[in-house]
Image (cartoon, rainbow, N blue to C red; front, side, top):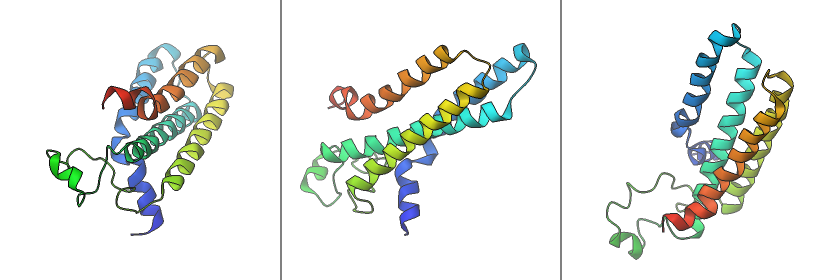
Length: 156
């Protein structure tokens, strides 16, 4: 399997419906009151949401690996865990398909792309910038803290 496929597995695209449904539902609910739909706003919102979601998935993979939450199937620790395979969403680091630094680097790049898309979004969206900023810059650190910060301690 090539590197692109490994990165694709690491971002876990099968989970993106959880971030796309609120965007699409919000667009559908806003349409009757606005009587218009901006494809540019929708695309920038989707790009921003998907990039932040993918970055959060990558940092989740990284911190699970660093803190020993994910272990190899050949490791003695995993034999003690019930259904060890079912509890692991992404095996790219524990199977050596990617290096931890590669996962972190891609996560930072995706956060940056998501932020750039958000900055463009503020120019095209009819919503007021302070409201957009509170939503985006509130969600971005929470996506990181959940996987690498406070979330790591909640589930140990």
